[in-house]
Amino acid sequence: YGAQKKTVWTNLALFADDQLRQRVAFALSQIFTVSPGFLAYSSLSEQHMYYYDIFVKNAFATYRDVLKRVAFSSNMGRQLSHSGSTSVRTGMDASGVMRFPDENYAREVMQLETIGLELMEMDGTVILDRMGL
Image (cartoon, rainbow, N blue to C red):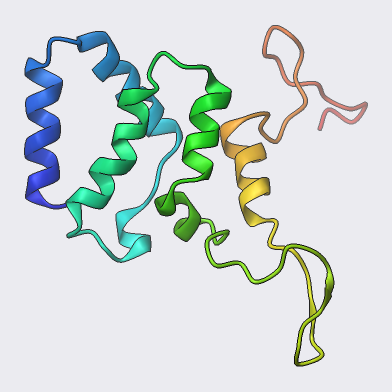
């Protein structure tokens, strides 16, 4: 991630006056993860600090607000391919090739950051079918 990022984050995590905000921000950053290796800009610590600031600034906001800010961030856009997506609807492009909307981000949000893959009871237990699957 770069030495700068680690130094700044460590200093804030240990000495900031708003410890609850810092801890909530860290927890949110563990839910809405981006991979610096995947994005190939691990040396750009400022880019990651801007992304992390979303969580610091919105630590006490609603989950919906945080999700919206993350969705519009350039980091998440590059990682989940909605940044630069050439198609917003199904149709033919100028070269005659059928294009479909990029649904990767919507699927990732649904599976990883909201409802998940399993249907569950209110107490969190997984609902199984007759076969136990």
